[in-house]
Amino acid sequence: MDDIGCLRDDLALELLRRDPREIDAQLSLFIVAANSLRHYSSLRPFPSSIMSNKNSSGDYDIYSLRQLIDQIPVVKSLPNVIHNPEIISDDVACLLHWILLEHPTGLKLSIVDEEEEINKVLRLAGHEIVESLRPTHIFKVFTNKSARLESQYNGKLNGDIYGYHGSKLQNFYSILSNGLQQHRNEVSLFGQGIYLSTDLNVVQYFSGSSTNWNKSILGAQSNCVLLCECYDHPDVKMSSSDPSRGFIEGSEGGRVPDKYIVVRSNDLIINKYLFVYSRGNSKFQITRPNKSDGFLTWIFSHKVALLFISYALILFAIGFSKTNAVYRYLRRWGIIN
Image (cartoon, rainbow, N blue to C red):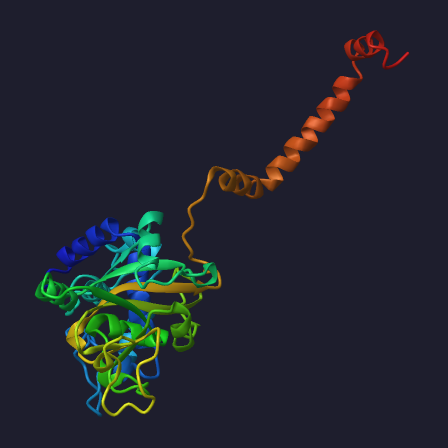
């Protein structure tokens, strides 16, 4: 867009329309990938239309991109400053617009907030989830590819299969944008393919906690797990009564064991939900205060005023207690002689 004013208007509407946690998660995944030592593979797609400069080696200018990232303020302040060029430069506004509105894959995250819907999502893979593995946040994933695959397979294959995939935090921007790719899979004990598990506990090993964006409202440390939907197809290998369904040619470990799924085709799997596990409090964290929290917050915010009021009430009580009316009242009730 040539008109930077219209671009800022579009951003303002997007920021007001969406939940701040959705914006924060999308920015955080991009920024973690950009700050990774393996940004060449984790930052795909790269905002080439924004960062058109290249260095002498022919790589995109990651250092200039990181300088722009450092200028992005905390999400909760964005709606108030998006039209202020002294705080949000034109380059930063263009980068935000690219991430949130122009992303080549159409990546969007939508918070799952209703308890009934959360419980429904947690039951999709067929195993009960213990409280310690319950995610802090759940986001529904939308991309152009997932929409195409859902339309392509809708009603054509019977039975859907759900499984979890774990990876390092830095990889999730690329995973969500491009889908899971079997050529990037580091595990191939039971044959080549994309590895999932129906047991959330199994994938936690591959999903170590990492440092989040330092301005994120989702926590200082985070790790992610992806809940995927794959279609019931012969190229989706799993434990089954059908011998051909549980074995992949070239497997070193034999048949695919229980709780594991190996998907042989990228086009048979869709990213459905992102589970985010947050650890460590963020100084930018958004909370939902209740009435008791608000009352306690007011008390702690007005400690000095309350001290003076209490002192004045004590002095008033002492002075009042010395009046003749008080003495007559106390004698009447036999408290003093």
